[in-house]
Each structure stands twice: as C-alpha cells, then as structure tokens.
Image (tube, rainbow, N blue to C red; front, side):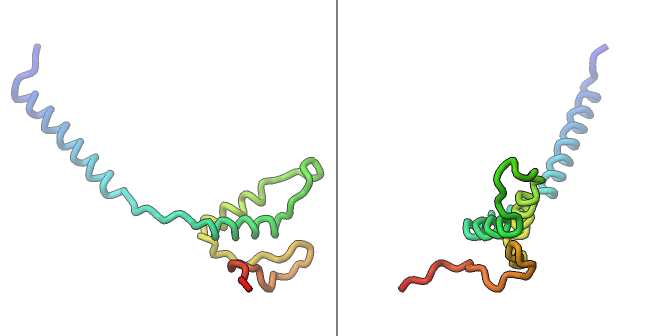
Length: 104
C-alpha cells in the first residue's frame, strides 16, 4: 500500500511546519554576544588571585583550585571585584596599581 498524493502533501506540510517552528525557536533563543574581557582585566584578575592565594611550592601544600576559581569569578564579573586583602595582613589593600607606570 503506497502513499496517496493527499497523505504525501500532508506529510510535507507537517515537516515544513516543524522546520519553521524549530527555526523560530532557534531565532528567539539566540542571545547577543558579550565582549571578551580585555588583557588589562585579565592581568588585574590574575594579580588579585595571586594576592588572595599566594604561590606555594608544589608539594608543600595541597592545591584546591581556589586561585583558579577566584580568577574565573573575577573574569566573569569583568574585573569588577573589590581589591583583595594583602597576603598576611588581613586588611584590604589601600592601592593596587592598575594604571600603567608613570613616565618621567
């Protein structure tokens, strides 16, 4: 038993409708792209991460990935994090030089 022309047309119409609905869902779900953080933001986040979690000789203490998690969080916030406390002081840093060095 073969398909009749009428059932074949219904099948093509329903496939076209499914394709159209799928295309509409994809078009609606597309979000705008965000700009990547700049190199300056990456440097600041890395410096902050090493300030909060200073380097330790491998094997001296187990690493838990806290530094990487802090860096990724900082990058996710586009560098908008408060200056971290200096290592060993317990107080917040008064100034971390984010600007380029001054030329004399």
